Image (cartoon, rainbow, N blue to C red; front, side, top):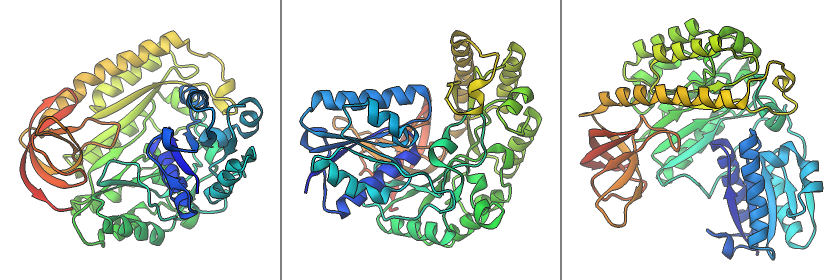
Length: 443
């Protein structure tokens, strides 16, 4: 059977899709290879969320065909789902366009491409159907870590966001299905399970009319063994505070929260179709920190949204200083067609948005540097990701560091990737920790 290579782009949710694509192809008899040179089919698993990501994905498609004109190049992922007809018509370098609504169609689609057919396979997202578990043989994370996607789509309809256009309305998996997958991954030696979805604060609302995240955590708590669970992406407007005592009582749940506030000015938040306020968000932060004093909190700010004035931005800056977030990512607004914000007036010039982003990042550098100091001298469990060839050093992550987006921990010892080790943090270097080994713990 033909060999394939996946060129992965986009977020962790798209990564899980890429893992499922690879697993379905292997199950169908295709051969996975680790470089495009050795593949007959190159699958570019694209991102279609914002303009820069779209450009990156398109460039990857064009470059793949330029470098290997004899190979088949298939476009998968969010870009395919969002613009299937336009890509099929205009992107002549692509031998196939396959969407992400039904990944079970992937093997047959790739087989047709191999046989010489140029395919367009992109059924619409089925909002009434839950996202079903498929056993993933392939995992694209560093050893020891795996993401579990517990919801698909989103029904929040923030006015700037294209996710409902690409992935449809919210669909939640059942708790039983998720726990089964978690148990399977733990049996494979995974130490950190990362729960993801567009908004985990809405998990289960489509099934039971309420957030089922506390129920899911209680079910995961009944699993035996030494492991870590990380919860990412909870919309702050409906944060389920009942998860706090569950996390406090079971140290296997990382007290780490990713709360995308996006802004603090109420006029901007209302235009974004978000219900929060600076006051409400500061109260939420206080509640989390009161329950979990060591809590690590990450957020994202979106600057340059249509109508954002200097006063609005100043309010965001003041909120940033009061919130004292541990980690923060700042982004410039990307004008996306078919979203409600696309036609909004009073657009902010890109030059101003860029300056605002830079100022947010400058302020946050000092905040993060100061917040990380509290971990010096602490002992904890770290999952090892990489080992240096030339030094007795390894790269690891603690519970306070999410994959890809936060700093890492340099441990002065050679340890096997995927292992869980106990170490003591001795210093902070920028956004990273330096640590020394205490003793090894099996995951």
